[in-house]
Every structure is written in C-alpha cells, then in structure tokens.
Image (cartoon, rainbow, N blue to C red; front, side):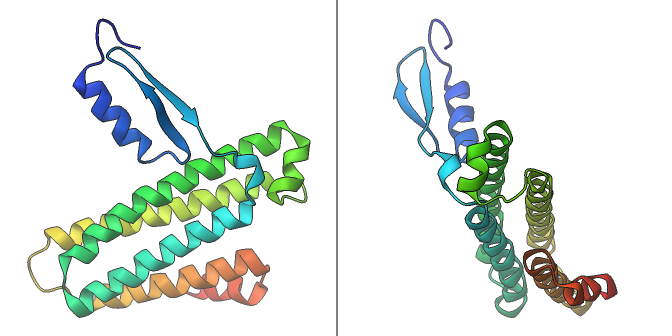
Length: 186
C-alpha cells in the first residue's frame, strides 16, 4: 500500500522482483495497492525436481558459454543472463521448500527428504548451483564487453568448469567417491 497512489517506480520494482520469485503473482491491483499471492504449494513438489531444474539450467548456461566461442553470437550471452533469473527463482523456491520442511515434519516426506539434517545439505547444494550461475553470468557479461579476440585458454577453462560441474553433480546425486576425487583432481 502506498497513499495516495503507488508510484510507477514502486510498481516497476515490484514487477522486476516478481520475475525472480517463483509462484508469487499479482492477484489484485489498484491505484494505491497491490496484492500478491503465492499460487504454488512448495510442500508438494519434490526437492529433487527443483534441484534437477537448477542443475539443468547451470549445465545449459555452461554449454551455451562454450557455444558462444564457436558461433560468436552475443545473443547467446544475453540468453545466459536471462536464464540466471530463472535459476534465482528456483533457488528461492528451494529455500521456501526447505523452510516448510523444517517447520512441518509431514512436509519432509512429501518433498522427499529422508532426514531433517539433510535440509542443510540441500540448501547448501542449491546455493552452490545458484552461485555457479552467478559466476557464469559474470563471465558472459565480461565476454559481451570484451571486443578483442578471446584467448583459447578461457575456452579451455570453461570446458574444465563444465567437466567439474558434471562430476560435482554426480558426486552429490550418486554419492560417488570416484566423482568426488575427480573434482578434487580438477
């Protein structure tokens, strides 16, 4: 609520913020107020599905960063930046799932968490995925500003990041010692 009317600045900021929050929508709006409502019940969506989507986003961002070097189209870099907004949405959604699971024991089973202690692990893993996305976006922004030819060492570094990411996912999801060692070696 803002009296006598909501400023255009506040309306625009609200819409920009809503792009990053999963399931929160404007359900009513007038001259001096906006009503938001959560339309998704996070307690019925498995945590693994949320993490799957986050992993897929990070992987596609890395693949597109590599593709940029082959094609040279800066539109690919813009697409990477946009996907980070979606990754942020899923991280906030994961945070909501974790909070619900901590508050209500029956939610633990519904979202697929076997032990309450694992909520910390899932939250940390989600945070790592979100931070990976932020790093990839920083690289995409750097590349879009850079006008000179990109050194091949950067391409090799990004390929190494992708390899490390895939091994990290395998180490976490499958509890693979071999993949954990591969990440350490990288």
